[in-house]
Length: 291
Image (tube, rainbow, N blue to C red; front, top):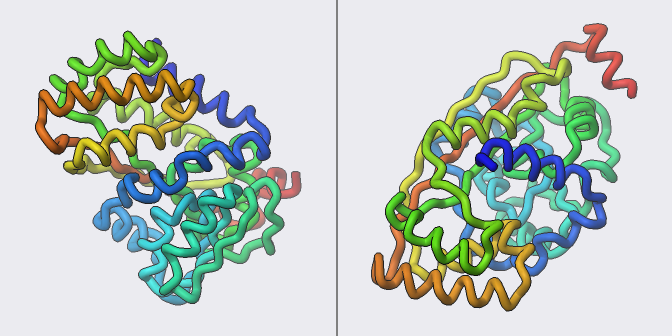
């Protein structure tokens, strides 16, 4: 199955899960997630802030804040943030990460369960989280929370990839231990296709207008320990039998040490898609917001 078709299938699987099923999914990897997942590039955050006109007086709702990976970047504006997250382990980490920001409130709940005051926020931000929520719930509920002309902002950091030659060398190991994790190297066209799938529900929603998107490629480098820890935070690794995961990681370590020594060069694509809530009074918006 090609990567774009695979992401469609994966998103449908995520969205079909109950809140309870999703609530504890990342708990086994919460600390590793906070330690190794990259923050969103400052240039991307600044572009989003400028386009949305966010300032220290703005109010933001963050949906699925995780351990605060993106929260801190927006909190540095000095604005008020309500960050909701269903996973209690993530909430503790987010509270710790945001200790120096008194205007940030972390709430242990899901978007489905949360009952906002309508038209309260200048922006709703979701960093690598919106695809976990069925779009027929996520888009209208975000719109209800937004003030007129407020912005829904979706951010993504794609998975970090080693150089293509290294990626291909590791595929043999994946096929041996966990063939379901074997996949082709994601070139720029493939990444663009995956991000298009992730953003499609927003682009097709009649509740929003004036969509804008951008992305950039980020170069990074991690020690082999940190890279292997990072891998364990991705959902396909979390789904592995522990014995299979241990054997896979051990052989990946050997190969990476042989190919790169102590650290691994990596790249990933970071991107955003944002759109503005339609003005009140438009018939199609009224129809959806009343549902």
